[in-house]
Image 1 (cartoon, rainbow, N blue to C red):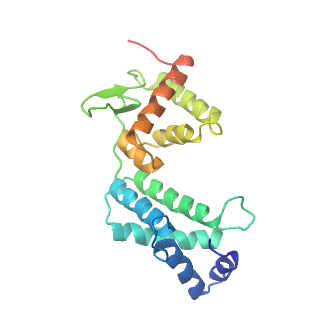
Image 2 (cartoon, rainbow, N blue to C red):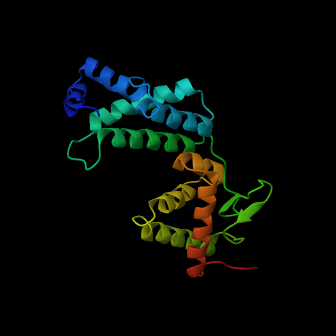
Length: 203
């Protein structure tokens, strides 16, 4: 745990306190269950997603760690570390969306994921022509995400990520920190939920 007093001192500009937070975040503990292993795994995944050097990703994370120190409020319902990871993750998502590693979604194939053998695309949404049908599908996706925000937060987060431009199962798995199989199962469940809303159009 990072002592709250340490955060306060770092926020006030105490360099030693911030250095201690950095050491805790990156390399103070070395056992297999320590934060450093969680941090390194998290940063390595984002280095792959963004196609960046690990050292560059680590430097970006330290900048965001400092922002987290400056903005964290002890009245928050979550820990400082949870807040810091969220800040860092949001920065990486912004980088992705700005085109660091982004691929445009094929507008003829909304919601596709790799099949088990990786050779076939499974299409969740039907071939749309944009316009009203596309907006209707997006609205229904937001509805499903909202309805499942508490009972299935991972499904809700996956939908929101897709709507931000993340379309491939392996990329979603990296961001959600789960397996490709789990992502595919979420897609299958989502397909059922969307079909119940009757928003697909067959041509």
